[in-house]
Length: 94
Length: 94
Image (tube, rainbow over all chains, first blue to last red; front, side, top):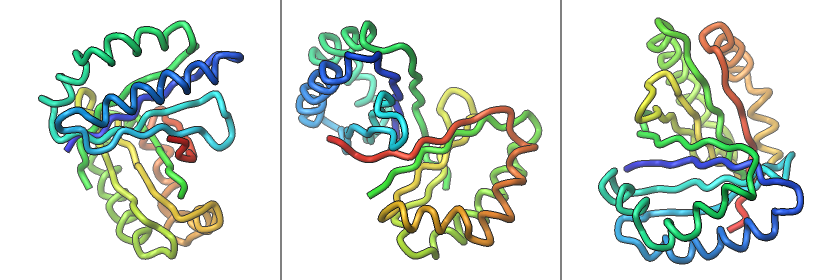
């Protein structure tokens, strides 16, 4: 299983727009083959830090996700709404 | 439920020592009241990025964890083994 942590710092004034798009992305992504979990989290101290934590069966389905129509439509739109972020693709070791 | 993502960049040559200590921390922490999950992940592209992803019942049990004897003994030792990292405490919103 693969775990993805995709952390975003959302610009002031863009939070509602970001969350609304994220909600659409989640709805479509949960229908994808091999998607075990795809959830959205808010930092408890800074509401502008919004993070996806995702579980995928393997790298094959994750790579397919990066080419899914809803991913290609929605994810590029996040760029203008964020001022930073990073993504890590993890394997569980313990 | 609270989700914690604690990301560490481990110094070259310190990886085995870090993982061994992390294993002890995991073993003790899983016995704590209110700990739902406490797992260790390795970045798929950079093996020096080692991240704890944790699930806790609420902030009360998480705050108790920060004062647990094994936390107070082990976590300060991580400092000399890492060259960066960050911790986020999240609430699930979607």
